[in-house]
Length: 50
Image (cartoon, rainbow, N blue to C red; front, side, top):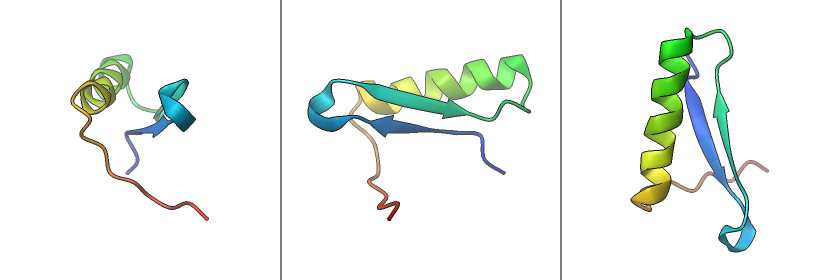
């Protein structure tokens, strides 16, 4: 089950947060906050999507 993810842009200029549109509004809000926490704490994993 996919809740969300953050995609960090090159050189830290633009970032994207993905959320599951089928989750409740409250869950989406939590997921966005959770992903922002990863960004602010610089606590992200790198995944190669090639």
